[in-house]
Amino acid sequence: MAYEISKSERVRLRELAAKQSEIASLPVMGQRRKLWTDVNDGKTGSRPPFAIETWTFDRDFMPASIFQCTSQYARSLEGSFLRNIRHHEILNDDHVCPDTVDMGWHLSYDEFGIKVPVEYVKDGEGVTLGYHFNCPITDLKDGFDMVKPSTFSVDRKSTLEEKAFLEELFSGIMPVAMRSGVFGSTCLTQRLMRLMSMETFFMAMYDCPENLHGIMSLLRDNALRMSKWAEAEGLLVVNNGNQCTCGTCFNFTTQLPRREVVPGKVRLSDMWAGMDSQETVGVSPELFHEFCFPYYSSLAEMFGFVYWGCCEPADPIWETSLGKLPNLKAVSISRWANQNYMAEALSGRKIVYSRKPNPNLLGVDVELNEEAWAAEIRETLEITRNKDIQLEFVVRDVYSMHGNLEKARRAAEIARREIDRYF
Image: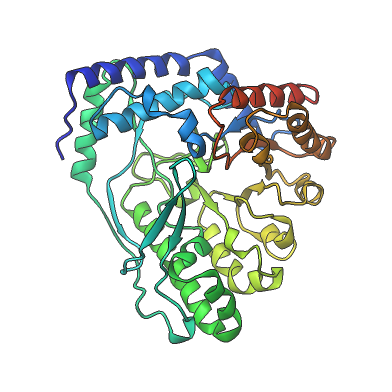
């Protein structure tokens, strides 16, 4: 691929890169790195960081009016710089501004060997939000022979071509860094929902349990095979810094890797991985343990640290399953979780209590109810106080700010004020 941008786009991108570099070098960024590092390292008494994930309300945060580049490639770079800059200038939460221009390997990936059509729906403001998979498996009793093991490859030549282009473009401003996750699709029930509906999944536990175990094994083996392939190919890059494993939950830690590593020789045991199972909220703890947990557990054994969860409550499956997950390092405590139960469960375990405050308080009303928002933050601080718990706050799933970005900035200010009262 030929990477070509206009002279004006080049000037624009270099200006934005220089601005991002300047922000990244501010002393406050070092302070924020320490916040996330102390929490992930399990430091007793560590102050909780607070961050708001923005991509879900890009209709407000990244409007078309702020872009100047016109070509697709230049515009994607421009968007990355603008997001990082605006995190600092508008939100001023605990995002750490990157000091590198990041890119990934060029991969080709066929997950199932079949097409899974997706239908998208726009909301009332014309923004694409809802989607639906046209799942190919309608009755698992009939088997799943149509589903094939995943195939994948890497194009090193085109990857290095892009890297060389970026290095020349941003020469003297910021270095270009290769980044990676663990590559395999480790959120197994999420992948399952691309193949069958929730109803088909639920009925299969009773109608054809052996077939359900079979397809869960296939999904696990897909993830395992791709992750092991990436490790053997030297594609893994240690993700112990300004990277996210789940949403906006940053990976800063001194505890990974646990050995000296050189580029191209990174192991899965040096890496953070993310897992969740939102799709099993309606499944009993016993059935989750029987049909899902064994496959997650065998994957988790490969990694250095595992971040578990998204919106699903962790407490229903904690005792039977999640509390036994190998290498568990952080747990999402969503608005549907029993905060008190999880505070007791995680106390002294050096597992991060990754609190997700109620996003409706930011996303539903045009104006922020400051008292309700402060109470939301304060409730978690009260529940976790006087316990050996490493706490972080990450706001996710806010889909509109109704054009009022001051609401997000004020939410960060209030959260910081409430945290100050306890730390």
